[in-house]
Image (cartoon, rainbow, N blue to C red; front, side):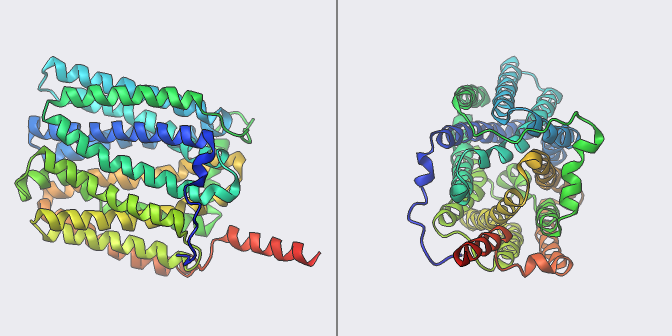
Length: 422
């Protein structure tokens, strides 16, 4: 990281539209994180099945995988602000449906999975639009600070959301879903007030050729392909967070409030790391920082599997989140700065496929391996596999692992030197 502090790390908040977007993002994330605690605990109480915990991830990932590439085309063809607002409204509907299910007193879990399919569909359209919109909300010179601050605010919500969800769950899951619905309603209103700079809108009609343009672009850029595939395969095997309801109940002998703290710990580590990145951006040895972050993620997962102490587990999860944040930060800057605006939605969709696979499919993989090998062995397997992937990718993509500076920084310096000679 740069040793030179950027004292204006929060100056980007002076941009009104970025502040509105950021607030809507925080509220929406708070709601989703609160709901995730309630859903996981509610399903595990009803069924007592580790496999069903894995199905929570699969129910969200399956529609996401089907819809994400067309969603990228939608983000390039239509107003990204409007797409995000509609997706938040659909998430609000999901929260109200979960509330109705809870109030009904049903002991069936398939309605929960059906709602999660709808939620996964909304998230499929929201992710590429959100990733592509951010660069249109701030000037280019403020973008790295905007990325770090957006990430830190997201993870602050990830910190607070599960804690609130766990505490509110003591009053019943219906309370969690009501509060989450109110937050999502506010998020929709704020997003409707946001105005972004004009985007380079694609006029091409939807076809397999246009939908797959982002995939072709990623395949043609080894740096981008290596960065997002590293996240896919590393986090795919290290998705221990899906098992936290069972880990809290069976290993730590704790309740929903403790689960809330465990769920919030990775967000705490990520938020602290992203605040540091807002003031001390990564400028040199970029590849080493990225691979180091993934390695820390794997080591922290191993530590989680080896302990039955609540404090040690919290520390391991904080380190897990910090390591993941470094990798996410580097990847996001690399993808957004190296992608033309006209296809940024489709490239963001490809990036979202990898992120979604590593998260939801990783949660499903963790549920399956826990059912086969046992809870603790599944966590240890995930941490070890993450470290193996890190080593293999460092050898497979040497240009990425040895990258010293971001390509856009090098081009900017070259342009400045050329202008100085004129």
